[in-house]
Structure formats: C-alpha cells, structure tokens
Length: 276
Ligand code: HPA
Image 1 (cartoon, rainbow, N blue to C red):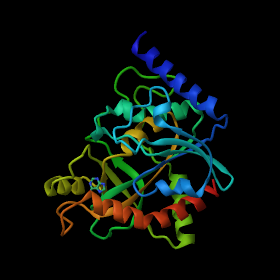
Image 2: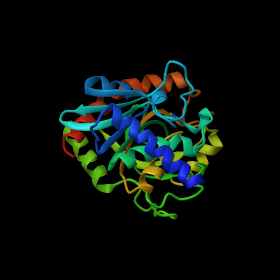
Image 3: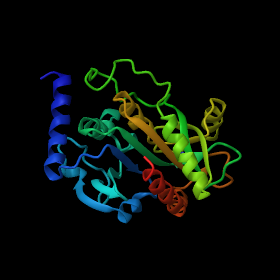
C-alpha cells in the first residue's frame, strides 16, 4: 500500500473503533491542556476510551498519564474531550501528534477548541491571565502536512489567513466580558521544547510579534484547519517568559498557575459552549 492508502486506512480503523465503543459523533472537540483536565470531571461522561485502545493512536510516553478520548456532554452539548495530548518533545513526529485530529475530522468534528499553558511575552500581562489566539507563528514547527496530501481532507497548499475563527473568538470574548473574566487576544509562537527558551529567543519572538510562547497547539491547529475545522484556542499564561521573568522557569510553577487559573477557564468554556 502506498503512503496515502496506509494513512487513510489507519484513520478509518481508528474511527471505526471509536464508533464501535460509542455511537454518538459530536461536532465539537476540546483539547484539555495543562490544568484543564478537571473540566471533564464536571461533565456527564458517556464513554471514556484510553488512547492506548484506539488503533494507530501513538503509544503515550508518560506512565500513569495515558491520555483518554472522552465522549461527554457539557450541559446539553455533546463533545469529544482529548484528556491529554501528544507533544513533539516526547519524541513523536508532528504527523503522529496530529493523527487523532485527522480521525476526529473524519468522524465529523467541525469545531475544535485547543487549550494550553504558555509563557507570556507581552510586558502588560501577568501569570494567570488568559489569551485567546488571534494567530500563531509556526516557524519552528515541522509541518504535520508534509508528505502526500490527503486531498479528501483539504488542499495541498492550505491558506492560513484565518486559522483561528474570528466568530468563535468574538463569542468567547463576549462571554468573558459577561462573566467578568479578563481575556486578552494575541499571537502564540510555537517552540519545540522540551527546554524552555533562552532570553535571546524570547527577544526574537517578541520582535516577530509574539505575545505568548508554548510547545503545543500549532501542529493540531494546522491539521484541523486543513480539514476546514473552525478553531478556537485559549492559552493560560502560566509564567513570564525567560528573560522577562525575574525567577528561573519551572514546570512546577507552570502546573501551579495553570491549576489556579483553571476554574475561570472552565467556567468560561462551559458558558461559551452553551452559546454555540
Ligand atoms: N515557554 C514554552 N512553553 C511554555 C512556557 C514557556 O515559557 N510556559 C508554559 N509552557
């Protein structure tokens, strides 16, 4: 079988397994980034499928944090939750990281909400702030679309003018105002990690127009937008970026601030979902 047939077959096999475990096919998927895992605990879970049980989903690298695909209801809205995600720094290729989003697009996903933890570059922002993505810098991201193109999903040379849907962004900002949750809009720069950036890299990214930096989201957004999926992405600014922060960066701080801000992010997303 050639490369395209192999990929198409794998997508169908993964999709069939998911459908055989639960017949509902939500049109919205939400990726729960650092700190947001508990959102799924507040919802009615209809099916919980470990990534390891879905054929061709990459094997999770962190023991005890296997990652799950949930089919759930937030209020009345059926959603897929990706509870956990894959990162390039774990050793996967960008094609592997993004395979689940091909499968969800095949199953009928029309809207994707990506969440993440990010370092803040904008001097006016503070740890704990939220940012909705208006755009991204993918310079350091190996394209997940490299290789034979899946024409049934999208074009060889996809336009990237509107990766993040402006209607979804406006609706989120409106919801945030109603709930008095401050949310900035800005540009997210992707870095591969796992090392945090150097101060020189942060100055470079700032001069290129970035407001935040992180190690996820962009590969997923490229693949989903290729399939015409409308995307909303929300960052929790967990720390000031290297050289801006007065203290050394630590994963512990990222996790702590992410957990502290998760309550307002979850309320915001729940209220947002009730409107779409
Ligand atoms: N850099 C990259 N990724 C991150 C950061 C950061 O400062 N904070 C949280 N994720």
